[in-house]
Length: 120
Image (cartoon, rainbow, N blue to C red; front, side, top):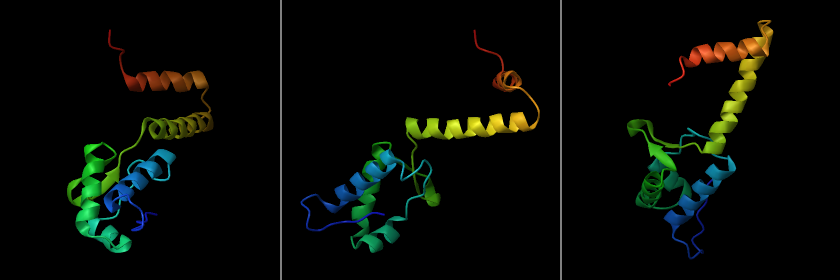
């Protein structure tokens, strides 16, 4: 949840930016999390739409979020979040391999086949 404190010396757009950056870093905002539309967030925070738009523009320029046209603005994942999601996928894959009665060596072989030939 984002909040803007008008009593702080930090401009509202900076407060919004900083909170999104912090929530992304902590994992509170996961990769591909859709942020509220500019107008909706502006109403929720009691600020002008241009304030939220400026924060989103700065975040996009920094690679923290990406805008996908009419679909909205989304959080870009970090290396840590990508690794964490990959670890979950790997555990799921290994569980499925075991359920099929295959060995871990079989799992690696299937994975290598899926990757294709190694570039030389």
